[in-house]
Length: 382
Image 1 (tube, helix red, strand yellow):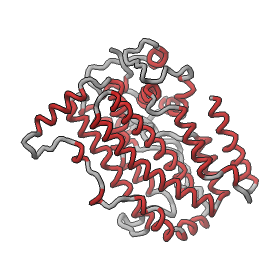
Image 2 (cartoon, rainbow, N blue to C red; image 1 turned 180 degrees about the horizontal axis):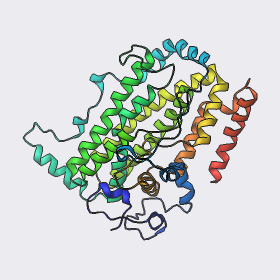
Image 3 (spheres, helix red, strand yellow; image 1 turned 60 degrees about the horizontal axis):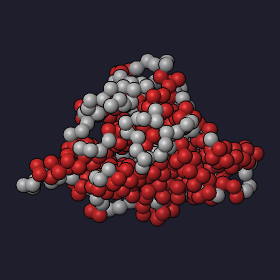
Image 4 (cartoon, rainbow, N blue to C red; image 1 turned 30 degrees about the horizontal axis):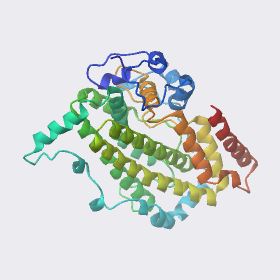
C-alpha cells in the first residue's frame, strides 16, 4: 500500500504523490463510510497550506529547522487598549477561569491506559494491540499528526505570553489572564501525553521518527501572524479551539467505526476539553466585541485575510518540507478536518459575535464588517 510521505512516522510506508492520493478513486483506504475524494483539492488545501510551500523555497535552516520565520511585525495594538484588558481582570476571573477544571477533578492519561503497576499489564497491552491491529494506516497518520500538534504546547504557551496586556509577566503571576494561560497549558498537556502513550503501546508507529518530528516542531516554533496583539490572538484561539474540537470529534467517530471503542473514548474526552476552551476564548472575544467593536471587527477581518494557519503548520520530520500539506490532505480525505469545517467555523463565529449587527464603527471598521459578512457566502460557493 502506498501512502503520503507524512507517513514516514509509520512503519513500512513509502511515499505517494499528493495528486495520486487525492484523485485516485481506488485508493486502498477508500471506505463507503468516508466522504468521497474532494474534486477541488488544490483549493481546499489552500486553507491549510496558507502559502507555506513558497516560504520553504527560501530557507536558511538553523539546526535543520523546516522554515525561516517571516519578517517580524512589531506590536500593533495602540497602548490605550491595554487598559481594556486591565479593566477586564475581574470579569475574566468570574467568566473565563470558570471554564477550567480543578486538577483533582480532571481526567488523567492513566485513566485510559493499561496499568503498568498491575499484574495484568501485559495482557492489557496485548488486548490494546489486538484492537489497533486493523485500524487503517491513513487514520493513524491523522492521529499521529494530532498528537504531534498537541505535543508542541511549549510553543503555544510561549506565544500567548507575547500578547501585550495578558501575558504572564513573572512566570507565576496571579492575574486571571496569567492563571488562564498556565492552567490552559496544563490541561492541554494531557492530550499529547495520552495520545503519545497510546500510540507507543499500539506498536503501530515509529516512535523515534515521531519524537524527532516533535523536537523539530518545538524548535521551529510557529508564525500565525498574530503579532503581539491579543485581539488577533483571541480571534485565532477561538477559531483554533473550535477546529481541534471538530478534529478530535471526527477521530473519535472513526475510531468507533473501526471497532476501537477505548480510542473513541480517548478522542471524545480530548474533544470535550477543546470544547470548554473554545467556549472560554469565544466568550473573551464576545466581550471585546461588546466593549470595542471597531478594533474587534478589524482584527477578525485581519486574521481572515491572512487565513488561519493550523498551529503545526511548520511540522517537519527532517526530510519532507511539505509535511503539513500531506497531513492536511489525509485529514481532508478522511473527513477529519476539511475546508467545509473551516467555513462552518467562520460562519459560527460571525453569528456568535453578531458581526452583522455591529454599529458605531469607524470607516475602516465598516469596511472590515463588509468584508467579513461577504466572506461567508464566498466560502460556501467554494
